[in-house]
Image 1 (cartoon, rainbow, N blue to C red):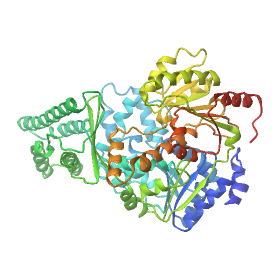
Image 2 (image 1 turned 90 degrees about the vertical axis):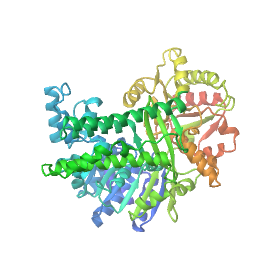
Image 3 (image 1 turned 120 degrees about the vertical axis):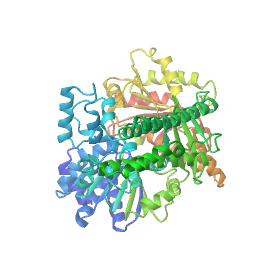
Length: 640
């Protein structure tokens, strides 16, 4: 490994820097593969962890002629690996074959394209020409578009998981998504993402081929993705959309009289659902709540199959007619299976049949989603991941809490795994300083917002821009923004939501600014240089305890004799704080301050868990030290 990184890779990467930690990680990955083990490896910012696992993966895949899967959380990292990192790997291993694959919504659907291409006003003639050219040369992937296609058009022609017939579709042989399997079958390295990886399990691995090894990069996100993916969901929007599809199909085969009867059945079902939704909205959501933990039986039940029994009968009769083609029969089977699926999920929700799951409702603008979510993920992981690959690697900059992996091991039921923590090669003691607030009120106190506003003014005055304020509460962020946006002189104040994230970051880089952001900016944002020299954490990032998912998981932990705070809430908050801290120092030339304005980190016993999980850094609670730090850095060269 050392020879590859020191003498070979350096020839192909112009800004390559020797990092001992990178070689240590590559050795650990190689040993894990050799011994067919599972590895938990935390790689601090700046190690170059992506190349650390790709090199031994490529070496193994070529030598053994086997497949390996790299799974990331974000499409951005997928693209970076595919378009940047793999180019260097290809020079080291010229015979390596690799491909990238995205989730279904990123691919065009030929069936939907044909259905909507003649829809009045959807495409201009030139627009249709552009799209047909894209279909011809772009592999049907939105990322390959060379022109702007608005979401409202793309959403008319892309794959819709709810309406996809999978292998029974008449366009299967021309389907870009399923034809990817042919390409993937010839690849050594497949670059996927967490949602795609676990969604593929639910469709009997219809896309991703068997692979010896899987690497989960951004692995701290895998737990939530499994719980999300394996939740059963009944969406009223998707169901009404399906009923329209059902009605439009069957009307071509029935007499006007029979169709009136069928249409009435569908109308009655829609009415019953809407009446039910109005009822629970007024009962549970009238005070602007958006979520409800519903581990109790509701007063009303809706049996979809009873309402649609005549529709089901007509579909069964229709399927047996000789004039019905194979494609039409396949579509009828699809419709019947969807009725069964929707009915099963809703019946389970009403009767609470899934004992290892909890039940909750999301209601936003009277758009309802009913969820059945598993309490635990370790059995899902063991059955579908651990038993399916020879080696599994979890890696992230945030996998440990207080220098151990106990939380991750407990969630995934991991035993006998290899473990390694590699610190960032950056000199945090010289490049950064950590400020811990001790005088602001607790975040739960009414006066906190007023005092926080005063502190934010002070920080902007000290930094003169180049500062990102990370919030955990959108309402608090918006309130502060409204009060401060026109009162900071020449320092522009930007806020997440006023434009897309990429444009927001580019505007932030253009001139010294202050950026207000929430959870999605705590992780995955990479801003090097003086554009970002101060990260302010307004509140320790504990998740909302009243959200149904957290509430149900906390209750289950207590029911089993555990401590929901120390066993679950605290480790997850530590992960998020580490992610927020990691936004600051992204290169050896960066410098800056991280300022935590929640005094609980200093006065609560659990504060040590946060601090022990951060890099070794100078800590102060004196604001003068921050001023002196910036003065010194702006007037001297950084020595690392």
